[in-house]
Length: 396
Ligand SMILES: [Zn+2]
Image (cartoon, rainbow, N blue to C red; front, side):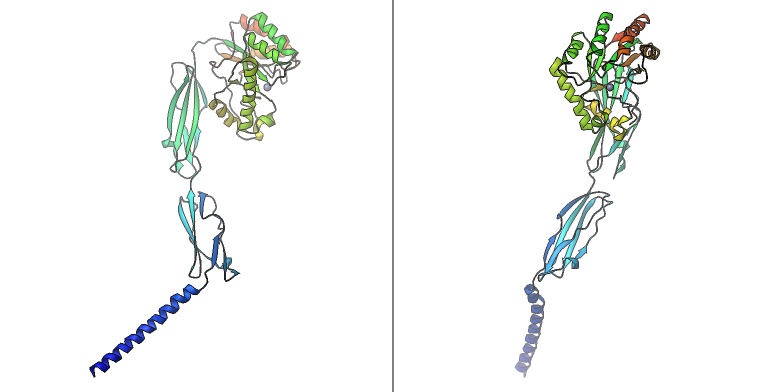
């Protein structure tokens, strides 16, 4: 009896085991035998996405048993492009079709530092600079003003440079610069005669003759010149005048097209002047002045350039007395009146005139202007790289 019962019990256990085996076998081995879908990600497996930009789902190419099933893929996961982080998107088809994509939402944009007050500050030697203030904003981290550090660097005896530095939480760095010019408290009345747009065949030699006979130095902001005009440039140097860079070209549309075109425009001429005269000048004047609005076709270009030229070791000089000889003024009396009325005692007077072709009125007014200056106690100087920059307000 006992053995019979035992045998029956064993048979039942065996049956149960066989049933379990069949269930498992159908479940798994048929799964193994089943063909897998062929899946491939469209686009990259890892994508770096700037924060606050759009994530565009590219999807997956998939075929199953020779048929296109790309539209039947299940896409699981979410990308929050407003927040930095690593996100996963899973693509699934049936039991065996699985792919994954990683999306890294990152902050690559630099913060922006906005300087209050002037970018160039003129101070009397011996006084110290009171910070005019600044703000730093980041597209992701928000206000970073209290993270800004300031470094003060001595450029030379007449100039310091302040470097404002800030890094956002993602490690993107930004810098800004401010220049401080120290002028001697001389209270002297100085005239810097400056001539733009030369050298020219007729006008420049006539101007040089007058300067020579009056024993007065001047500054020539020149344009590109040919072989015929090269001796005039050499004469300017030999007779002790300063050479400044106005630019290889004066064509506003061309030169203010970009930072690169402008920098090339002054560097090309700088190199040419060096070849002709062995002088390496870093004195420049923007065509139209730094306050020009003719460059408005490229918004903000003058703000950017005024920084860029200083960064690259150039100085730029506008003027605070305009002769008007390239504009409305048509007579030598007009030129004389504009200059003498614009002069102020106790300061650096930078006088804008032109030595372009056939500028007779300025040639005729020049001696009178020099005599007026001498009679009224002005000293004549040329611009060197120790002359404090005289600059106008940037309007673009
Ligand atoms: Zn000019």
